[in-house]
Length: 247
Image (cartoon, rainbow, N blue to C red; front, side, top):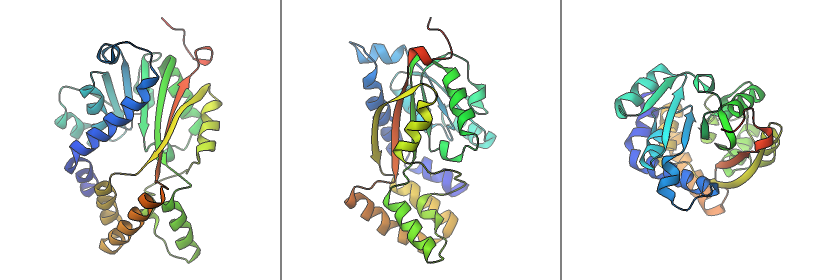
């Protein structure tokens, strides 16, 4: 836990800039004449917020935001790092119904056992036309291909895919289909790499130095090949499918 937490804190500015970039791209979909004014009127939530970096990124953009996580330890640490921001202990159920223009979930959905229940709950928290931003490992990435090859040789190297308690791995099509069942339409999609030091810390913690060195090679090949290990989907809730009335 200490190494993983250090991974998020050591490069906090890099992480903040990364999340800011994701939110900026996703929120281009929101119609407005003045970006700062539009952002200040948004209510947003980050589910599985960890140490609160994504919440802090939203706050830097001027967005009113809240973060939630099942780990009391991480929530306590997030409050230490960002005492002015709001963090709640729990999952999506601790968020207010029909409240949010934007909900994000970074590297969370692959850990959720009840996928349909999770998406349904998110739908209830969003306002009509709201956006759901999901980041999750890409099943078609080079990381996953290496993992499958090693598994075929009888070698357990799950750390290369950050498979720390993952229940599901998604393709783009599978995730879009799941979200579509609950009235979400894909609005944007792209792939990107995990922050390198984050992966290195996690691999060192879980599998040791040799695995961390192997990770560096796979990471470089992933960037060169364009087969990045994470995908980001921005899905918009269609007003007619929302669980609450606008206004």
